[in-house]
Structure formats: structure tokens, C-alpha cells
Image 1 (cartoon, rainbow, N blue to C red):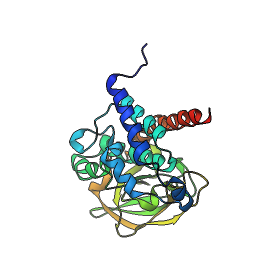
Image 2: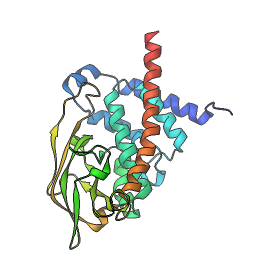
Image 3: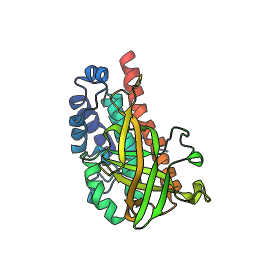
Image 4: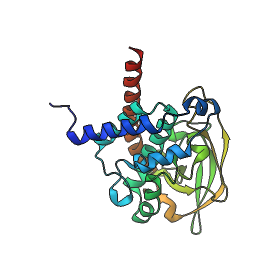
Length: 265
């Protein structure tokens, strides 16, 4: 089996490495010291459509296949020395953009994907809670059906990009009797929705330019058209996102490791 890159993939890799090396590596030490996320650099990445690598061009993405997406993220991790920026972009793309692309309605995709792909919106994926990690069986956040939609109450913890989020996929229990399979639903919530706020921000030892924080939902009303992937479809949305994240996030780490090995020799 031939594992060599195609000419197009080699050109893609070289372009992203060159872009990241030339545009994203200035002032890293200062940003790390101040734990500062750079929206200017984020928007530069958006101009390259890095936030929408596998998303079809009709929605503002690059239309890459999964393998080419992994190659692009490996190149990004190699060329960009700011590990926090790389991590934030991967979290945005793999746990928020991809689920909307795969499970969003036509209206949801048209409304959010172009701005997610060009960087004008920052997305997050909120599953972890104070009393549970990715163990959705222990989830305490609830979404109760009311006239015209749902009301969400709960807290999410250790959410990557949480303090800077413009859009969040929030998972909540909609049917406790069904549990994880059929009882969890994903909802799309925008920044500024009454009752929804980003609370405390956490200091970290690493990836300091990637903000991590808490999201609080206090009697937040969402309409039925905010549901992503259908009522009770949260487990499917979450699992699919994790499949992409576990593969492609690691690709960015491979790129960083390759660069560090070269630097150390």
C-alpha cells in the first residue's frame, strides 16, 4: 500500500506550514505569559478556512476529505508554535463545526457554518460537568419541554473556548428514563441568550492561550429549532464528534512532535 502524499496533499501541507510559520508565531511568549487568546490570529486562520477544512465549499469551508483534513491539521501543528491556538482551533472545528455540518438542518448550516468557517464565530462543545466528565450517564443538566421549546438548567465545566464562545452545542437530559441513548439532546445556543453565560475562567499549566472555563445555564429558553440532530439524538452527535476529534486532534500533535524532534537534534 502506498502511503505517500498526493501532489495536492503535499501542496496543501506546504501551504499551511508556510502560512503558520510566517503569520502565527510572533509574540508567543507574551501571549502565553498573559494567557491571551488572539482573535486577530484566529481571523487570519479563518482567511485560510482552517476552521472549516472538511466543510463543503457551499457553506464556506475547504471541502477536504477526512485524510486531507488530518494532513492539514498535522501541518498546522508543525508550523504553528502556539499550541493553545492549535488546540482551540481543533476544538472549534472537530467538536462544533463538524457536528453542525453533519447533523444540522439546512437552516442551521446556512446560519452558522459560513461564520464558523471564516472565524467570525467561535464554537464550543459542552458536555463535561462538575460531577461528570464525558460520562453522559451522570449528566445533571436538564432541558424541560415548555410551550414553544425547552428551558435548560445546569452547569458545564472545563469547556475549551468557553470564555470566548459565540456559539455552543450544549448537551442536556431531555428524557431521564431513556438515559444516554435517546435521552440526551444537543442544543445550539448563541452568546447573549438570556440566562446563558460564561462564568469562571481557569488558569492552566499548558495550552495557556486556549481559554478554558465554565458555562452556566439558568432557565435558558431555546426554541425547538435549536435542537441539533433531533430530539434524543445527542449521543449520536457527541460520538461522531469524538470520532473526528480523536483522529484529527492527534494529527496536530503529530505535527508538533515532528517539529520538536527536529528542533532537538
